[in-house]
Image (tube, rainbow, N blue to C red; front, side, top):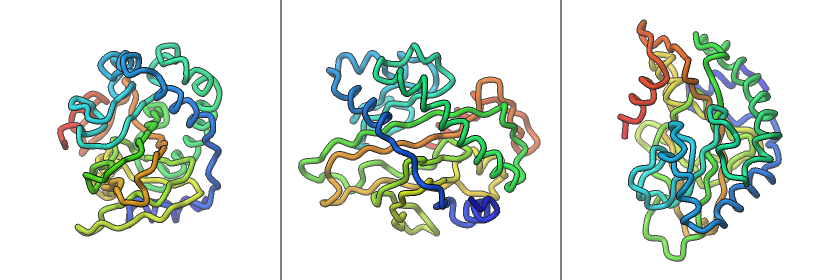
Length: 254
């Protein structure tokens, strides 16, 4: 991957379509679908407030108090991260967490370290970790909303789609919404923490998922977020803040 070009595109556009072929997503897809097959009463035992680890846990369509989606969003989400002991997560995720998660995370950190150098960021690898947003969009009978996921910047330094993206994403540029091209390669977005750490040099990509007639079938999407760990000390405009301070400032956007 051309890291100089990637950094340039993140500064100019907020996203980068790499030439790295997307990885298979069979196992993580199976885990999410198996979890969604559980009765709702069982799924509710894994809500974010029950997991008690910031974003980790389950959010359901129509939920008013989720930290990572709005009540109007037509999506069910399960967030997993390295910040929670894997045994706490549902059984469906155990094989993935024990095997592929660490392997993918390690490979993504190699990419992210190079981007951090190119963007002259002061944050260190030891201050960062990964969480994964696993998103299940149910098939829609009748379209009653123009969006499946409302507009937002991500909480991350980088958001990486290691399994590629489909054609339902849109991004905001100069006040206009534009389609993001589908890709079978790894795709990177700039997050709000990247905007914060770069003092606004790199803008977080504001994006959303559109809802169109031909796209109302079931949809799965998986994004890896680079976020600070609990011990991180972040230098923001000459001030030192911790992860809790940062998450509070991010959530205050909504």
